[in-house]
Image (cartoon, rainbow, N blue to C red; front, side, top):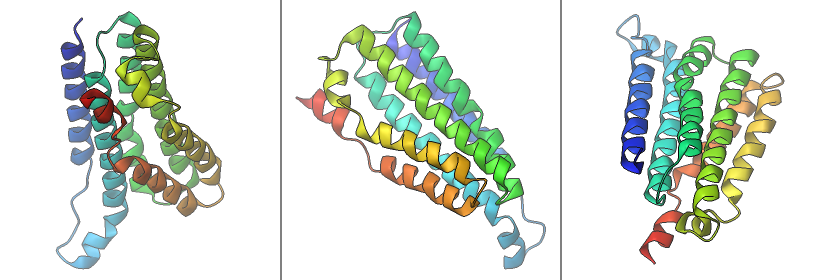
Length: 191
């Protein structure tokens, strides 16, 4: 399989994930601001999840741009990532529907953690094929952002059972860490 086919398939799956998420948004029952406020937890959860999926799409695009070739291990690592991302609409709807309740918030964190782990596995699978001195290897380096994100997710999951707002804030912190485009790959490619 070519790199472009893997990227096209992944783009399609991610587009479907985003579509499913927006279709899960509930229309307010009423026409005033109070009706709109009643669905704000669902909308805010959707917004956070949309940002996360957009971040994964952006980073996946850059990752594959720096990838020279793919093999079976990379294909399965990519499917592993897509599996966890495909659960985002489910946990988004569950957490959004139930507000600040421990278990949905913790499971949301677990899915985000597993997606981050899956992305790390995908990066490592590509590096195993291309080498640490490849464009990607030089760009990723020690991947401090990735490691910090994993630690924050690991902290947020048990905190969901203590104080859900703290867990939500930690999820937002991870999104903010990654929201600024990561110039590492682009700078290595342009050299």
